[in-house]
Image 1 (cartoon, one colour):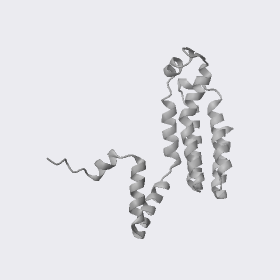
Image 2 (image 1 turned 90 degrees about the vertical axis):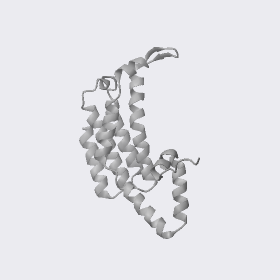
Image 3 (image 1 turned 120 degrees about the vertical axis):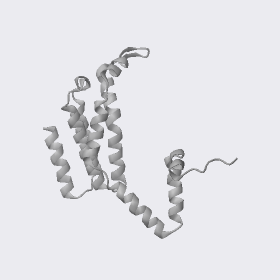
Image 4 (image 1 turned 135 degrees about the vertical axis):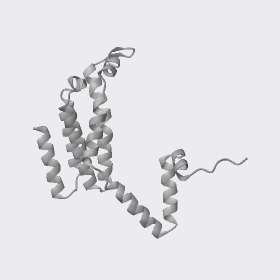
Length: 178
């Protein structure tokens, strides 16, 4: 008895991103019209980067940092002593770093507007977290401001955006740091 025919959605769930990318490239190569349609669709996705969404997602991720987990993985361990402040910093960076890497990736693709939006979202998300009431903040005293500075410097080093965007990012940075 033949198996059930899978729908496009079901097939998409079963394959990984790399395979989907390969299929899309194969289809795009079959026709200039299809290539144009795919490019338009992908450009819409790229321009959907919204600093508010990025800030909210980062804030929520940082707000999930748990002091109980921090304490469980610091102090005396089988491997020796793990400083609680160093572990807190490491946990904080593990949440922030993927956003900075995505911002750099956007800059490498010459998507400077999108990278600027990403930068502002990251900085705002960190700032919102640092003014919150998370118990975890007691263990990462300087890290939020340091992370905002690192994000800004990384953005600035790869930045080639228009001067209006540059001014907007710099203005937000100075407002958050001071």
